[in-house]
Image 1 (cartoon, rainbow, N blue to C red):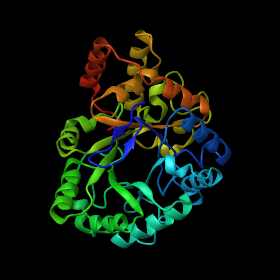
Image 2 (cartoon, rainbow, N blue to C red):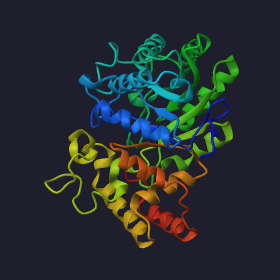
Image 3 (cartoon, helix red, strand yellow):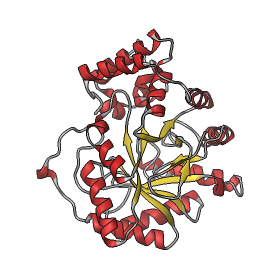
Image 4 (cartoon, rainbow, N blue to C red):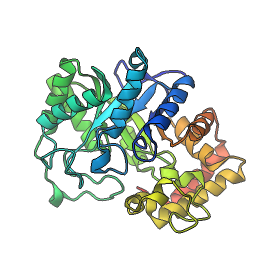
Length: 353
């Protein structure tokens, strides 16, 4: 795989990134290390994690994923220098008081979270440090509408940038990024960075998949014009776009055992558990089969080949899943298939928004 630049930064990464949020919950440390070994063997040297992982988030597993990665680095001296490592500072509390004492995300919180991540990861520097979700109130994780009445921001974007700039200056962070952001947020972070000589965001990590393409309603233009790269997460919609829920649904006795949506009620209450999301996924999955593709192959090829996407973040629970996802790279979707995909989207829009 040819390395690609992230934004206007010096980072060069593979067009596929291994996401690790399953490590520490669905995946134990030994299996996680085997998956990491296999990813590296197959040429993937871009890893993404977060301080709040594993997912679904629990107090008992807070920081567990970073710890697993840190132990993997410790087992392989010299390996850290071959990896582009991304992690995230959690935004204001979303029902997770164990993340930090306060409910918000202050400049001091950013610094403290970074220091804690560095310790768990057993590294001196984070290549890409991202704000997991905005400090200000925004519609995210499937919410649709912005509501000014819910605004509770206490730390300005400028102050956040200054804190991140301090981490860069101290050599703890190489580049910065955002996640679950809006066009306004990306513009403000770039504008203030340029105005005040602070670090410029290289990336935005947002959901992007067949059942959730809201990014194409304006954020893609913002990122293109400002030179900010997209890291697309949930390309398989938490498994909806693999076809494994097509017959069984997402819960009940016939739902696949161990699968994310089926295993966790908290996930079923979110966008991936919506009846409309499953209904839409079934249509895309059948379209794939009609054209001689597996559902996962078509869904991944969609992300792998879209101009909007710099690197696609895949999440797996086994080496077999990893190989399947990587084997889909290089698949080309015909103009006919792409037209049918857009036709379905026109009818159903983005049910997992």
